[in-house]
Structure formats: structure tokens, C-alpha cells
Length: 412
Length: 104
Image (cartoon, rainbow over all chains, first blue to last red; front, side, top):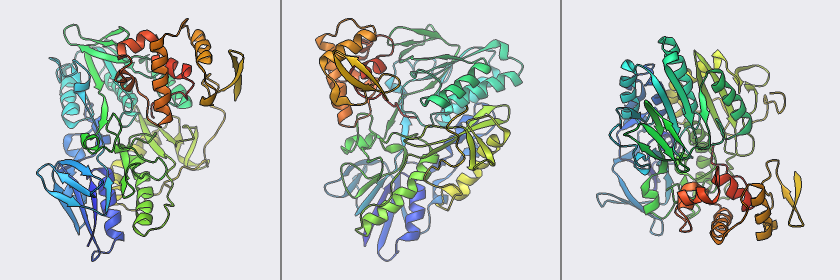
């Protein structure tokens, strides 16, 4: 029996398990998927929890529900990969041999990287919303909060779902307007970037939206520490911003296992060819999703597009053919802007987000880089599609490669 | 694409003034770009950091302020003192490498 091992049973790993089990003959191929957790989180849903729009039960399901029959599931922490020996060594000493390996271990937050985040105010006045614990604690806090300086700070890029912090402050604006206390809440968006977003046109449009909503952008702020006593965040060049409630997007890193295995960079992101999605280190290892160091968004939509390329190339490698799949960095994000509206951006390695219509040129129904009600519904419908179509590796109505059809290069 | 003349040499730059051909870089070119960015004189530490950045970029690594803080040439606070304001943007411009995409 030949062996395929998949590390991580999140969005990427689950999709790959479904795709590969369908493709590979059960008499020839043994497929094993490894994850330390038994619960699958719909991570885009974390954003909605602080504002009472989703509850915990809306975003969790057992991982096992999505792993197909005929795939071995191992719930264990991975100690390291030994690429020379084609072995995965689990924390309890168990060794899994593989012919091919897919690493889809994702990315997570490391609040301890910034002094003071996990200080005396942690989950009292300082919150994250990238974990179920953080977003739930914040939901409780908002129920009785009387207002003050609401500061959102991005510690470092890259982060998971780079538009989420923008959505958060726009949701917060709508939330406090609806509660009749927006005049008591001063919202600040404090970022190490020089604007609302990295890509120029989107930054202009999204920055404009924040301004309209009276959300102040504090750019070029690179946080050194949180001063719990005086409720301030302090940057390396000694700028200070006071907070009554701090929403931190802590430093993100890949799984430390990638570092222990010698497969990654100094942030534990796996060194990956950005077109073939193969590991730079070993020819029989592919990297799927947020775990890779490729220059595109860390987000489920990207993982989904990339999974088609990993699938194609993994089959090429298994059958000893040259790799034909070429990833273009396609990313597609609905951006919630509050009050039942949303925006949508669609871009890749070479093309920044542009205005226009999606997916059908001139028709839509979704509008690119502008606020519409339809875009908001798109995001809500997506949760259903995620559980029922995407995770199971079924066909989605959007191509893995970005298209210029429907996009306008000029007039913004 | 635009061109600029630094230290008597014509250099290709993008619309934001970042060099598009890293091989055109010299210490003299760096010193002149630095002046435009408000840094009057480049010290040995400046050059060590610039070389580190060029090295990292040529290896295809993602450049972060954190990585420069761990480079052994300076810490993050020191990096801010060397290139005040927006150190990574200034330092990459002076090092003649593309503006860091810092991911989307």
C-alpha cells in the first residue's frame, strides 16, 4: 500500500481528504489525516460573534462529520516531519510513513509575542476575535460596555483574513449606532500599514468608507507593547494610543512543527513554490493554504482555490508527470461593511482588487469594490456553502483562476 | 516606468520611487536616496542593515520588521532610530529592493 498523509484537518486538509479519497484507488492508497483538535471551526464566523449575530453553536461542528469514509483519522499533535526519511513523527512517538505529504496546518495567533497583550486586562479590556474564546469573551463585554476609546490594533502582517479587522470596525460602528451610543464610542483603526489596506485602489475605497463612518485610521503604528496600567498601546517609535477596549490582532505564525521540521521561515511558514505549491525542500511534500509562505491572503477562499492546484499537481507527482497546475494567488473576499451591506474584492498575485461585477460581467449579481446589499447576502450564504459544498471538495461555481472579465481597470 | 539619476547613474524606478532593477544599486546610490528620505548620512550599521535586506530579498524571503530586529545588526527600536518614521518602507527603498508587499 502506498501512503498519503495530510497534516491538518481544517479547511484545506478536509478538502484534500475528500478530493483524494475520491480519486485514489482504495486498494492501492492508504490516506491518513492528522489533527490535534476534534472540532471544526467556521473561522469567518468568529467576526459575527462579538456583535451577537452568531452564537458559538453556529460556527462549530465535529471534524469527523466532514472526513470521508476510507480515510484514517488520527487526533494527535505532530512533533515533526522527517523529510529525508519520509516520516511524520507524532508527539506520542508514533511514526507515520508516507509516499506523499500534504501540510495544511494553517496559521494561528501568538499573543505572547507582544509584551502586555496577555497582561492583567486580557479578556477584561483586551480581546482578540481570532479564537472562539476571544470572540465569546468580547460578546459578553459588549453587552454592558458603556463606551470610550475602542481601539483595534494589527500587531504584524501577515494575518488571517486581512479584511476582517476592517469588517470588525465597520460592524462596531453599526452595532453602537443601533444601540444608540455611537457618540460615546471613539473607534480607531491602528495599523502598521500606511493605510486601510495594502493594495492601492482597495485601500482608497476602504479608507474612504472608514472615514465616512467616522473611524479614525492611525497608520504606520508598529506595536511594541501594551501598557495595561495606563490602558495604552505603545509603538517602537514611542507613539501612544489610549484605549478603554483594545481589540488586538496579535502576531500570526505558522505551526511551530514546521520550524521543528526545518521546512519553514522565521515565522514558521513553510517555504513553498508560489506557483506549484510544492515545498521548496522536498519534492513529495505539498503545502496547502495558510501554512505556506506564498504572497497572497491567508483565507479560506484562497485555500479553496489553491486546493484545486495542489490536487492537480499531487496527481501529476503521483503519476510521475511534470506539474501542470499553476496557482495565480486568486483570492475572493466578501467584506462586511455594516447595516446589511457588504463589498467584494477579487484579486491575485498580479492584479489588485478592481471595481466591476462578479461573477458575470456587467450583471453581477455581486458588485466589486463597492457597497451593496447583495454582497452582504453573499457572505451569509457562504456559511451554508462552506459546510455543504466547499469542505466536501465538491465543485464550486467559481474558477480557481482569476478572470479579468467584469473588472474595470479605470474609473473609480 | 520612470527613471531617476542618482550619483550620476540613471536608475529605473517605479511610480513610488522604488528601484526596479536591484543590480543597479551601489552604496553611492543608496546614500543619495537616503538623503531624499531625510537621512543625511548612512553609517556602517545602516549599510549592514541594507545588506541584510538585500540578502534576504535575493533569497526570496518575506521581509518583516521582526526579522530585521532578529538580524543581529540592530533591534527593532534601533531600526526605527536608523530609519525614522516608516523604517521598512524607507530601508527597502534605500536598499534598492521592491516595496515589501507585506501580504494582503
